[in-house]
Structures are given as C-alpha cells and as structure tokens.
Image (cartoon, rainbow, N blue to C red):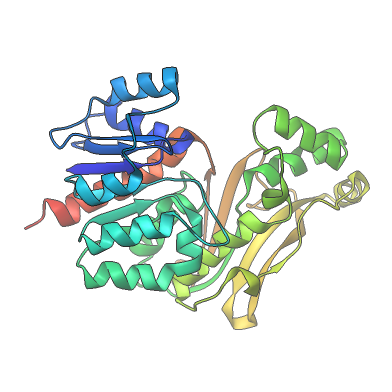
Length: 328
C-alpha cells in the first residue's frame, strides 16, 4: 500500500523509521515537513530522507509543500501528523479534507481536527468511500479505538474514566512519592522532556479534556465540544493535599470522565485509593470502560512517545490495508 506522510516531527519520524525498519508492505511516495517536501511515486528512500532531515532540518526540496504532496502524489492513505492546533484545527483539517475529497484514506494523530470537526470528517470519509481513522489521538499506544470498534462491538458503553495526560500523571506521581512541590515536580518533568516550556495545555487539563471530547463523540456521537467539559487542572494542587490523601491510603490523579446517564463531562483531580486500577505511575495512561455486557475493562499503557504513537498509526494503516485496499 502506498502512503503519504505529512509532518516530520517526533511522531512523523517515528512512523517513518518504523515503516523503513519493518516489513509492513507500506511504501512512502510523498513526504513533507514545514519547510520542504518530496514526491516519488515509485517509493522514497526513507533512511536517506531521515538522514537529510537530521543534517539540514529539511526533508526534501524547498518549495514543495504538504499541500503539493497531498494533491499530487500517488497514495492510498495519508498519514497526517502535523502539530495540533486545538483552536482552529488548521492547517491539518484542510489537509485531511483535501485527501478525503481525493478519495484517499486518512490516518491522523492530530487531536484538533477530530475534536472540532469529528462528525463532518467522518461523513466526508463515508461519502467518498474511504476511512478516517485517529487511534493515535487518544492514549498513545493504547488501542482504545480498536477495542471500542471491534473488541467491545455489541456492548453499550455506559461510562468512561481515564488518566489521559502523562505529564500530569508524572507530576502527581513525583509529588506523592517524594513529597515534591508542584513547581519542583514540574521542573523535573521539563528536564526529562515530559513537560513543555509552557505546560498550560497539560497541567490545566486542556489536553485531557480534548481527548475526552474525542472519546465521547466516538462512542456516543453527541457532538460535544471542549467548552462542554467541566475542567480543573493540577496547577493549584499542593504537597499537603497529596500528603493528606496518603494518610488515608489514597493518592490523587487527574481523571477525565464521561457518564451520559449523569450528564457528566469532567476533567479534575480526584482522590483514589492507591490500589485503584487508574492509579498508574509516571507517564502511563489508563482507561476504564464501563459496559453492559463486559462490565468494566481497564487498559493501561504508554500514552505518548514517538514509537509508541507510531504503533497506533501503523495499526490504523494496516487495518485500512487489510480491510479496504487488499480486500475485493
């Protein structure tokens, strides 16, 4: 199957490296970063492109844009992994629309378009007879969308609860384990590369809320937006709060939860018993699905990382290849 790759940051490089390393039956025919691009419908030498990117900061020819790759290259599926814009979803939404209108499948890790335009993009894909898949937008390597679509097919999903932001989980773990203040734990998270220079998106619960929106719309199709989520971050939590929880055999985690029967959409710090399945350590993510037949299912795994996110993207690509490109 031929694929085009738009975005060559951490996630894009991880995807490219895994396609080059593994015999997956995937050939990259177009690739673009923010400065340049390359089209070769016979197949691109990915190792050479990655070496050029590392040496020069560009992956191909200056002036060749992502839009050129999307509209001119020959491919079956577009891999869209440009940086997220949670306010407008652009330019990624435009890229995705263009590929879908060319009747090309799309796989993305970009939360903005999915959170903002989920219904439109799914309907556009259906109209054009192609797939729009976004496993990598929520919980990194945890295959939550595949579980919902296939493993729990036929179940009614009654509620979801989850630890969906590894940065917050790391900070809370360090505050609880070492008695660090919020500022000390945040500094450590920055030094280890778990937190951005401006951590607002993570620590104020925005990232977790966007992922909750994606999950809720996927499961219930209820058209919710980010502003519908009641959101409280962890930036005002104190070491004393963690210590008091510890004295009761508990700890604190930032929990995203959606419970339709209670009309509840919330991201907030919650006190949980230490043996609760959502009390994961470090940057791990965790999700519990409450269902009518399977009852409670909890998934735990790495919520971020170049190769981990590539795992989710490649899973979507191989689903498309096996079920839509190679099937009669």
